[in-house]
Amino acid sequence: MEASELSGNRRITPVVLCGGSGTRLWPLSRDKRAKPFLPLVGKETLFEQTLLRCGDRRYFRSPIIVTGAAYLQNARSEAAARQAAQFIVEPEARDTGAAVALAALRSPDDAVLLVCPSDHHIIDSSVFVERALAAAQLATDGWLVCFAIPARSPQTRFGYIRRGQPIGSGGFRVDQFIEKPDLSRAVSYLASGEFAWNSGIFALRAGDYIRELEKHRPALVEAVRAAVAHGREDHEFFYPDASYFRQIVPESIDYAVMEHTDKAAMVDTHMGWSDIGTWCAVQVARDRDEDGNSSRGPVELIDCQNVLVESDGPRVSIIGLEDAIVIVDGNDVMITTAAAAPKVGKLAAATRR
Picture (cartoon, one colour):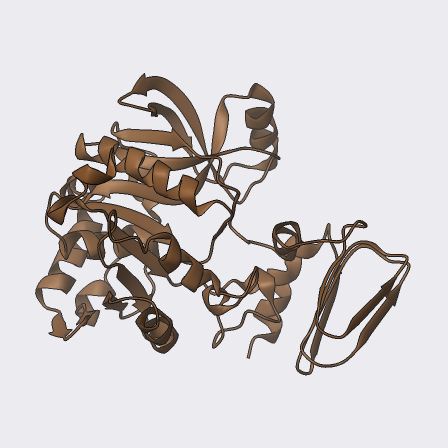
C-alpha cells in the first residue's frame, strides 16, 4: 500500500493496549510503576516507543489507548507529550479479547485497527511501518492479520503460527494458530521450520473482528456491547459501564478468536522485535560490552560475562560472575541466574507493594 492511498479515513487507527504489569521485571516493574512506563531499552519508555512508531500522520490516525484507571495518569501524561489520543478506561482488566472489542465498537466498521501492546521493543521502526501497511491492505480484504516473528528458540510464553498459502501482496494464510504450547511442542515447532512466533500485534477491520467474536464468543461481545451502550464519555475519555463489563470471562484475542477463525492471516516481520518479557530479554535488547555485560547506574564489573546490572543508587561491584542478573531498586535487591530469570514473577507476587 502506497502512502498516497492512506488519506482521510483510510489511515490506520493504532489501538494501544496498556494493561500488563510485567511482574517478571520486578523490582523495577510494580503495581504502581508498570512495565510500559519504564525506559527499559533506550531513553523513552516502552509506551512512548509504541506511540512514536505509530506517529506518522501520513499513515496513522490518532491512537485509541485502552487502559485501566491505575495506569491512566501515566498514559495520559506520556501521550499528551506526543500527540492527541482517545482513551478507553476499563473498569477492570478482562484481557485482550474484550479490550480490542471495546476499541472496535467505538470505531467505524470499516476502520482498520492496528492492535499494539504497549510494552514491546522494536529496533527497526521503518520495517514496522512497512509491515503495518501490508497488513492493513490484507485487513481491508477481510483478513485478521498477525505480525509473525521468526522463531529463534522453543519459547513457551509465545503463540505459534504456521504459514499457509500466499494471499495478497506479501501475506499468507495461517494454517494453524497455537497459543502458548508446552515445551515439547515448542521444540517440535522450532525443529519443523514451519512456525513463527505470534508477536501479539494485529491488523483487522473493526467490523470483521466483531463478527468473528459473534461467531466464536457471543457472550463476550454482547457484554462488551452492553458496556459500551451504557458507558459514558468525558472529553477524550470513554468509560464502559462497569456492571456489564464485569460479566465478561477474561480471554485473550488469541484464544477467543485467532485459534478459531478461518480469516487468520500473517505477514512476516524482521524488525528486531522483543516482548521484553524477562530480564534476559532486556539484556539482549540493550547495548552490551565485548563480554556481553550491560549495566546502568554506579556499577563496577571485573572478569564478568553476560551479566546485567542496574542500580538506582547503591554502588554495585561484581567480580567473576557469569550469566547473572542483579537489580537494585530502592531497598529491594533482586539477584538471579539468567536461567532462573523467568521465575522472577513468582517472587514479585510474594513481595509486591
